[in-house]
Every structure is written in C-alpha cells, then in structure tokens.
Image 1: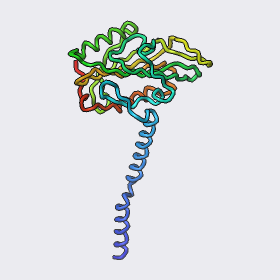
Image 2: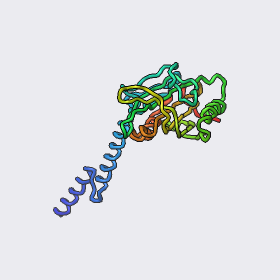
Image 3: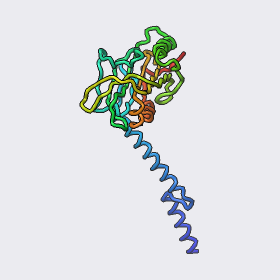
Image 4: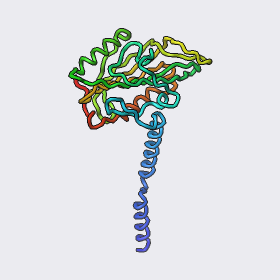
Length: 234
C-alpha cells in the first residue's frame, strides 16, 4: 500500500510540474524557443518604431536597413523622390539609404510612402494610371490581390529589371547607374485615401540585406487607424 501511494504521489508531482513521460514538455519548450527565435529575427529586420503614411492614419514599421540614422529624407524637388518610371499619387515621403553589396559597391535603396485623398475617384482608375506609367518600363507589371497587416485587402504591383539607381564610390562621389533592381508597390483603399507603400532596391543590395524578408515583416506590421479601416475594391 505504501509503495502504491509513493508511486501515485510521484506521478502527481510530475503532472503538477507540467511534465510527462512522453516528452510533451520538452517538445513544447522547443517550440517556444523556436517562436522566440523567430520573433527576435523578425524584430531585427524592423525599425523600432512605426511610421505613419501621412496624411492617412495607416502606419507600419519599415525595414531597419533603410529606416535608420543613415537614411536621407528626400525632398519633392529631388530627382530621386519618385521612382524613375512612375509618379506615385500623393507621395509624401521618400527615404533613401546607400547600401553596399557583397562586392562593396554602394547603391541606394528606397521606401516610398504616399496617400492621396479619394475625392470621388475610383480605385480601379487610379490603379490603371499607375500601371500604365510603370508599363512604359516594365510592360508585364500588373496588380495582384494580396493582404497586408491583419487581413487588410490590398493590391501589389511588382517590377523587376534594369533601373536607374543613385550610387557612390569610395570617395563619396555620386552618380547614376543602371542596375538590376526590384520595385514593389502596395495599394490600399481606405474610406478616405488611396494609400501607396513602395520599396525599391538593386538586387545585390537587396540580397545582402535580406530586403525581401524585411519587406514581408514590415507589411505584417501595418495597422489602420479607426478612420482608415477599409479595403481595396475594384
């Protein structure tokens, strides 16, 4: 009887500790560590604070490789304020950051943030105008349905190929060079604004700084203010 009681107390103690003989505790601990590691890796890709896509209330945390102390906030008169092949409607902020590739060559990566008041315009018409401009350089570019943030409906336009980028040599002398690059533009229609979020970078720099992963992480942080809760509609 005493032996049975000791065994029962031992089993109860294991259960109270959250352990079991089948390895469930170890499995859960491993999964928890994996989740913590993934979150830490994601955090490392993102700027610590959110940026608002003014004048809308949509906000997101931008890629840390671009949104940091080395960035330059371009003025509208700067030739690089817009991408070389399209004028983004309502563009209010254009960030530029020189990044090096694996060969040590520096070229600029960009973030574009804009929000145009709807003023009776239709989303499909605004999208068509943008696509028409981009098509002069990239005929195959077209809008695709995507989700951003926490299930916000959006459109994504992607263009890949030779593009003009600002570059810098070892002495800091600037010049423009045509490099293989990637351009991604996201469109979200809120009740009051057409919101645009764009990213552009040379492929060498994008690869070294894992910009593709950083952009995905950035888009997942998008939050809409109460007046911006809406969806992209045709």
